[in-house]
Image (cartoon, rainbow over the protein chains, first blue to last red):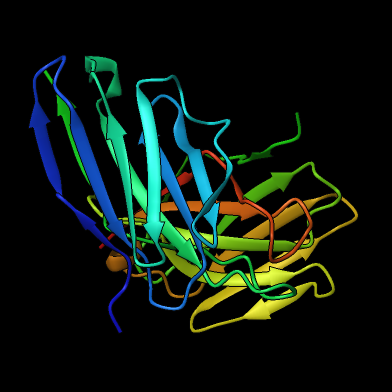
Length: 116
Length: 114
C-alpha cells in the first residue's frame, strides 16, 4: 500500500514567492494533518482536517499560510509570500479517524523548504 | 498548557546493548500514547502504541511501558542495532480517542556505536 505522498520533496525559492506543498493521504483515511518541523521548535501542528473540513487551524503562524482539502485524496499548504523564516521541513500525516479507533497518524516523507 | 517532555535529549549506546528512552507526560486525560522513530531525512515512523488500560506492550525488539501513577512512558529497545540510530518521539492524544490531535515531545536522539 502506498503511504502518505508529498510533493515536492525539496523546494528552494526566493523570499516573496508563492510556495505550494501537496499531500495525498492514505486511501480511506479521513483525517489529515499538516506539521512543520524545525530544530528550534520541533514538530508543530499547523492545521488538521476531518472529512475534508478544517477543524483546527490555530497552529497556522499567520495569514500568509493557507491550507485546503478539496477532496479526500488531496490537500495543499500554501505560503504567500514566503519568508526565510518559513524554511523548515513540512510534513503531512493522515489518520483513519474512526470514533473509538486509534489516534495513530502516518507521516509522509516531508517537503524540505528553503526560502532564500 | 500541558505538554509532553523527554528527560534525555541524547542517548549513546553500544551495539547489542538494550536502550531505554523515557518520556514524561502531564495531561492526565491522555489515554493513548505512541512512539515514533524518525531517521535523518525521513518522516516520523510509527513504532508502537499503548492504551491507558495497559501498562506494558511488546513488539518486535521493542517494549513500551506506561506508568500512569507518575505519568511516565518508556520505550525499551532490545539488542540495539546501528539501524536503530534515530530520533525517537513520544506522543499523547490528550483523550477523545479518534478525534484528538497528538502532542509530541521534543525527541531523544539515539546513537548506536558498532
